[in-house]
Amino acid sequence: MSPSQQALFSTLPQGAPPVRHYLQFADFSTDEYHYLLERTAFIKNKFKTFVRHQPLVDRTLAMIFEKASTRTRVSFEAGMYQLGGSVVHLTTGDSQLGRAEPIEDSARVISRMTDLVMIRTYEQTKIERFAAHSRVPVINGLTNEFHPCQILADIFTYIEHRGPICGKTVAWVGDGNNMANTWLQAAALLGFHLRVSTPSGYEVNEKTAAAPRQMSVGSYKTYSDPLEACTGADLVTTDVWTSMGYEAENEVRRTAFAAWCVNSRLMSVAKSDALFMHCLPAHRGEEVSADVIDGPQSVVWDEAENRMHVQKALMEYLLLGRKT
Ligand code: CP
Ligand code: NVA
Image (tube, rainbow, N blue to C red):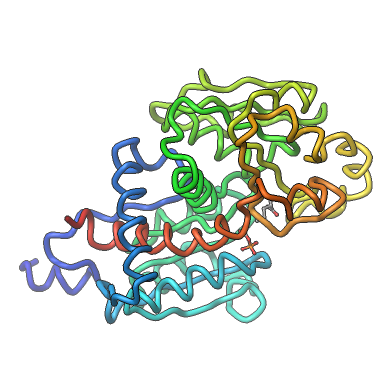
């Protein structure tokens, strides 16, 4: 096959790096994160100063949602338009994905017509199967196991407010869920200390969270008492007691998690300049009290906005590689 024929089989520009996927936080190296975090600051500054930054003109992002979303949809959609591209939005209900078309066939077809695919779904294996048959980069927009774009935004937000996160202490209070798993991967890659306090029976599954490559759980400690986990922390963070897909456990979880509420007592034992984060949506009076999420230490609105800025850097990187 000649080079020009070969080019017909890829939507990536000539000289672009081979297809990379972002299926979990551990898919990128520490060095790549340093680049992405710096690039995010550059791209955000352009946006804030009304300077056009459109490296993805004519490129299309397919967004597939098998679960509900507000932030992920708006941030990817607005971000892609700002980069000069466009988006296609699919859900299980309005596509053949909901009518049992094999995920491999969907991947083959969608990746011939678009340049990037973002998927929010249930099992991680589903997104892995899609990626294995995709010609274009696939991004995890949340699975039962991981939420890497959110943690990327959280880390960017921390750095914006407090400087480098390396060596700092992050306290996770609540469910050992997709967010907690991803924090664990991030701690190992970015060198901060992660303290996790979950009710008994809802611990992080270390096997799931441990990455296939260089991951170690050395910078990670578990606590049965959330107060102890938060003592001296630089960042306290939590999430809903019941994640999407686990609604049947709602009542049982309400009882189990009652003591895992980030309130002013928990914040009072953290460092005096500690930040509070929550990926949102939040339930005031359950995992967080209103005075904390709406209080002076909370940076949840910056955190939500930063989803868009980090994802713009991520999409640019996946399609075009490093820019100087
Ligand atoms: N944090 C987050 O992913 O929000 P959505 O569920 O609204 O996308
Ligand atoms: N852990 C939550 C995050 C929502 C953004 C969930 O999976 O529902």
